[in-house]
Image 1: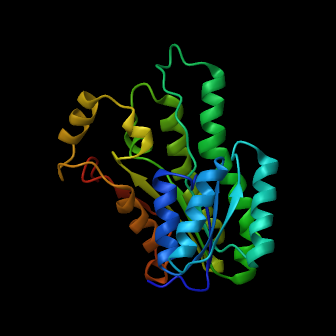
Image 2: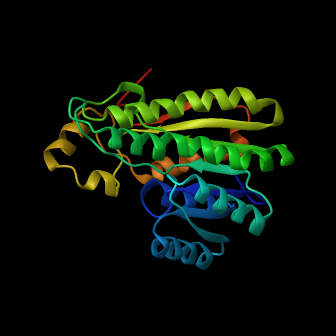
Length: 247
């Protein structure tokens, strides 16, 4: 599953799923441009990748800012010559029941989780078309497939990523560019650490594999979709949820 010779751009790479994806892609041989808001965490990640013999560079990025997206991706292409693997992972939550949800919280989640993915795809697609090879991987969520009370904004953004995935897959498939989504279930991350122990135990009871997922579970799936082993898979939503949602 070698990714040697390829350049990956990973958003939300400073922690959680994004960090695990960056490490796994680097382990498989890809050069990795890691992007997020936290410069210190990015620098630590780059040091870890380079210490293991990989190649990486940090690009400070708030994906809610369109100009920063342009600047950071152009910077990565300038430094590495191309970007042919894009992992749209950056995401936030602003949970509230819809009756009390503020418009600002709706807009922030849609901008960060969905609009940023479209903007990142726009910025890398020329590089992929030039190479006639590309992998676009959008990190969605099981809640984009089944919904979740109190997360109308989050569920809508993650469902939107699935529609975006299928549309892009149809647009660029003839150029040897695939576009797929990964839909994690209940994954142990900083985002889930803040949840109550009661909620966590309740969530695990809904999972046939009887455990929460790890960031490495998701990262391995992303690495597979980025590889030539997945060259005939596009427009697909690959669930990584321990059986929480089937079908």
